[in-house]
Length: 138
Image 1 (cartoon, rainbow, N blue to C red):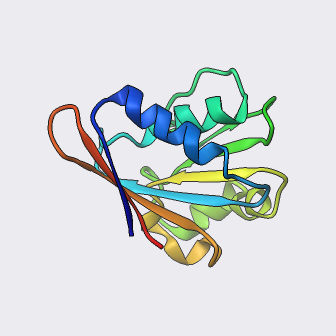
Image 2: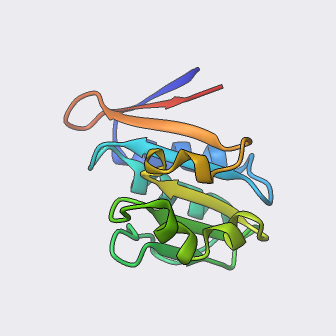
């Protein structure tokens, strides 16, 4: 397991930019961790690293945000408010997973069976008030 310690929101964004350089069409990133653990800051870095200029916010209430205009489209999901797998499927998760971009899913641990086997799992946790630990499963 690869572990990164981010000492600030800016470092978490930078880590997202580094990961963005490795992304290809069809990649899926599953982001797990408590509220405020840095998941959305990481997505800000992914989006910037892919070259999209839209402001990034958590899709907690809209369930999905699309960031277009970069090297690859980025589809940002949030499963926090979903109660079951059917709700995730009703918003078109399958089409996005088989689509032309990268899918990033916050609270992915709620419905792991919906995600492909090639999904990259990242766990975000609090290390201190500012610092975060980002663990990526092999």
